[in-house]
Amino acid sequence: MAVSPSRLDAAATGIHIGIHWEYLLPIGTVHLLALLAVLPSCFSWSGLVIAAAGPVVFGTLGINLCYHRLLAHRSLAVPTWLEHILAVLALCCLEDTPARWVANHRLHHRHSDEPEDPHSPRDGLAWSHFGWLFRRAPQRRSFAFFEQYARDVLADDFYRGLELRPTSTLWIYLAQVAAFGLAGLAAGFLAGRPPSEACQLAASWIVWGVFVRTVLVWHITWSVNSLTHVFGYRTYETGEDSRNNWFVAVVAMGEGWHNNHHHDAASASVQHRWWEIDATYYVILLLERLGLATDVIRPRHVRRAADGGVKP
Ligand SMILES: [Zn+2]
Ligand SMILES: [Zn+2]
Image (tube, rainbow, N blue to C red; front, side):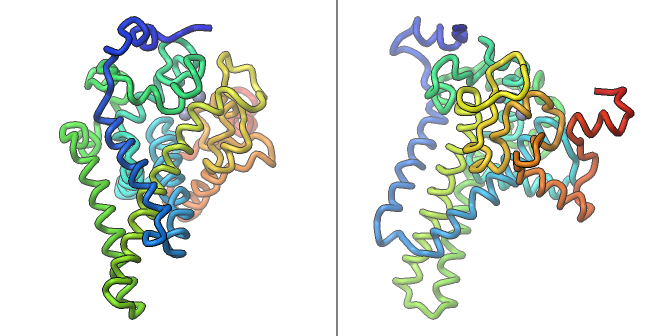
């Protein structure tokens, strides 16, 4: 089993391994804040509904559609204003800036399950799920790295500005906390509730709508990095360990058909069989129908058929 150089460094340096506190602190803090959900005073049925819908809105549109299929693989194009709105939804998930996310993901595709892979389960399931985020790896958080793997992303002034102002991601996250709180307050007052109950509703919307949802989206995304390189079936021999995992496909709105994705990473769709439902692709098709998505790259077998079986 190949062990990545980063893990070898960690083992060699023992307790002196660099902890990436900039990730460990916010991820740990939000997990703790999400635990407030067990308090009855922080619960509301509307908050629960918002938490359940959150991964669909923020995870599917922000992470799957924007960060992954649009920015990382350029499988479609949308107007800049819409792309930036989708990117802000992704930023509300506190999952790295666009350039960082894209660069690490492209590195994963280039060296899947090889020593250079930033999050291969060959180095341990927990490592691939979240451990790799907490390991200080300055070479993967440098502008030189972003220039190598995400130059096209950095060409956008908005995305480049996020790298030049490192705290901007946190401010965007805190702004949504305020927005959810104010929306909860407004909903409470509009419903004619007394101030104390309106404040309680606002608290529930923050805890469930932001903190619980953030934790859900994190673990869903991380499951694509971890579970789908360990558990599931393989349709294609792709030279690494990627698998199609129905559970991850359900919770991640299609992203769990990961072996299909590694086989044809350029495609905007990961649905290769009729029952391998790819909900994210259906959203892309809807955007295309509305005239908001163009240059949607079809699955390889469709491209082959369109080109008379000549081009891959
Ligand atoms: Zn993969
Ligand atoms: Zn990918």
